Structure formats: structure tokens, C-alpha cells
Length: 443
Image 1: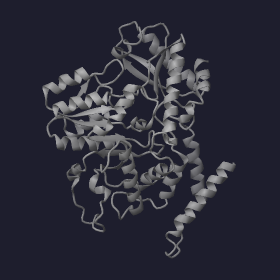
Image 2: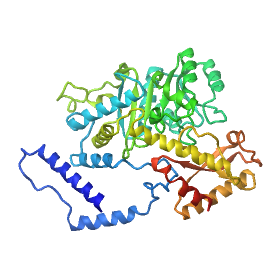
Image 3: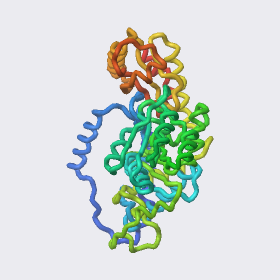
């Protein structure tokens, strides 16, 4: 209760400070919650309880990470004004905060003077990157690994661009020999490198990929919606570390602050190394952009209305936890990574489990050994998923192709895929909760 009281007092002081900014306005009867509103709010709380406990360390399933309390409070404070970051008229302060926050994200990967903005999601951020890619290299194909997010093939179809998947190696990373074969045939305009696949967390070999792309004159877009912030972590394996170190050589980059960036949904970001690509966005709106000669974010975005509150939450978080190696924010990422490494090691040492070795980031893939057949493993994985949930330990399921698993597990049977368990250990607290997670899993 003391902590809650402290938050309430801080919130009240912030509201009073915000109010002082508009003290010259005449008083008016602002809308407030009445008894009927409060009754509905109670019902909302009851309905929301019908959820998995995404905020708790015992939730280790999908990529759901609670926002930092500061980001949540800053977002809610901005919602008192409900700014729209499409144009400066709609979000004057929040637009400036967005530009500052985005420049910090660009600096994280080594870019100065890059062009970029926030989006409502990683999907929209990737859509913009591929839209620019199509305009830069019209009529040429987009390629990404077969483990890249499905959004790339779908977005390519929406944009009228041809898409082709590239095979992955036994670690789930883009196969460089397969990519080289496709590039030799020509007619490829952009290669999408994934730094942190959403399935198993694999990191594509970006240094070698950039070298191949340069040899064939191809653009490189990096989808790091999930993994981008790991650029700051110092406890990655050498291959993954080298990939993040090479980010500066990409043409475009996507990261989702609402994943590892401690932000509320929805907050994605797209960045372009060369600001000259901004000419693709040029358009006019006679009632929107006339009040200032400064850049309006709507002039470099396909989206129109966007929540300025998302920019305020991100700006506040980056003031509190700067994007620097060795800082508090980076240490949180390192804790998540360490949790995955230790969890994977426990699974590998236990006779009842199979595990994909050496996770690149903080996702661990495993399954009960069962009878060693694909069907038996799949069945046992589903049963363990349910049994763990009964003990308030929440995991996720994923179907993986045998060509990937057979390199690590001696699976019998003719089935083409196997259902496995997947844990996203995204919360730094997962490291301290590993013993509890292990106890409940092995129960």
C-alpha cells in the first residue's frame, strides 16, 4: 500500500504540473467519472482478470513484457491531452519528444542523421521499410529466411512485390549458401535479415549477409523488432554479438519498443540510414502542415493519426534508462539472456528433456523426450503445456520442422513437424525466478 500511495502522490504532482501549463485558460467543467462510470470500470477489471498473468515472472510464454511503471505513467499523463503525432498542430511537444527518442534509437545502432519515426506496430514499421525498398528497387524481389516473421511475405503481397523464402541452417539462421544461390540468379532488390526470429530467437549472420549483398548490389533491411535492443548486451555468443555489431551497415532497421523497450502497446520504430529516401514520402495536406516549417512526422510516415502518448512513454523511459552499453537498461537485457542460458543448461542436463542448444537471445525451445517419436514428443509437449498452466507456469507451443530438429535430436517417425515448448524469458526477473520455474516444470 505504501508503494501504491507513493505512485498516487507522484501522479497527482505530475497532473498538477501539467495543469500549470494551461493555467491561463478559463475554468470549465471537465468530464469526470461518475458512479455509473465507476461501476463499468469495476466490470472492466473483472473482465480483464480473464487473462494469463502476462506481468508475472511465471508467465514465460509469448513475447509479452510489462511496460516499465514510468513508461505507463508517462503514457497515461499524455493521454490527458491525447496528442496526435501526425502533425505539429496535433502533438507539438510529443512530436519533439518522438524525434529525440528516435534519434537515440538510431544512435544505438551507430547511425547519425538517420530518418525515422515511431509506428503503431512492428508490422507497420516493416511495411514502410519494404514499401521504400520497392520504390528504390522497383520490380525486384524481396527475400527473407523461412523463419522470418510471416509479415514479410504478407506485406510483400500487399505491396505487389514478389517474395521468396530462403532456407535456414541447423541453427534456424538464414543459410548463406542458399542466399548466394538466389542472389546469383539476380532480380533480388532487398534481403531481409532477422536479428531475433520470433519463433526460436535465431540471429541471422548479418556480417556475411551484408558482404554478399554488397557484392550483388542488393539492399539489406534488418527486422530486429524483437531482438534489436540486444545490441546493448555484452553477454551474447560471438556470432550473435557480431551480427548486432554490424547493424550500422544495413539500409533500414525496425525495432519494437513495446517488446524489449519496456513500452505499452503499440510502439514500433522504422529507421533509414540514408535520410534522402524521405522523398518517397512527399505529399501535401493543405490543412495539416501549414503552421510550421519544421518537419511534421506525417510527412515521413505512411500512417496518419498516431498516438503521441507512445512517444512520450518512450522518451520518458530513455531519459530514465539511457540506451548505453553497461547501463541499467542493458543489464536488464543481459539478465534475460542469462536466464535463457541457465534454463537451457538445466534442460540439457535433465534426462527427461530435449532442448535446442545455445539460444541466441532469450528464447528457449525444448520438449519432453517421451518415447522419442515425433508424435509422442508432440503429444507430451501439449500435455506438459496444460499441466504447467495448472501450476500457474505459462509456456507456449511451437511447431518446428524435422529438418531443423533432426540436426539436434534423434527423433523417430515420419511426421514432418514436431510440437515443442517455447519459453520467452523476456523479463529480467526470470533470472531470479528460475528455481521456481524449474520446480513447477519438473513437478
